[in-house]
Image (cartoon, rainbow, N blue to C red):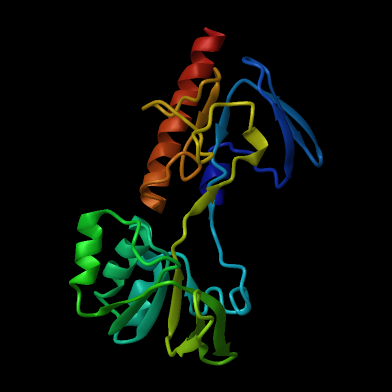
Length: 244
């Protein structure tokens, strides 16, 4: 993709953006290696999954620890997996994983799910799904060759600990949009995602956004690419009108 972009004239700089000043017609991008002034900006900084920050999580990330069931679910055919979370995303991921896994534990900190009723019913009526209530995952267990072999879970009220012998851990406790750089500079929603109209425009003229930084629903490569394409087309149109 990089080579294709460069073939059509794109210049790629591997700089860290440290600040940005939105001034319609002359936006300033300040990096660790200099400044750029531009007529249009497309923000595509994405989002980062919330993690548990527990022992073993980093060690086995990508080797049994995942944040995307649709990406990695097929690797767990006829195997046991654990899902952490209690909202729509967690229950949807857990239900999706039953297409492949032989057993799915959903570990939730509370005694009831936050997911919608229809999502709850799907999970509760699925014979492959087992809910672990009032509990939290304390540690990811595994070894260098096999990867994840289980997770240590503690009961919040009693502190009683058990080990679930599982081959995978899917973390579904939400995402954090990478928008700290833009706070107070463009409109964000209550979760920190960039607000755009249907054509990827932000509230600042000449500033557009695409991908997971403004989409907290789908979070898929194909939808991110689509909104990125739309943002690029709108940016091109904006510059043409500006130069008029």
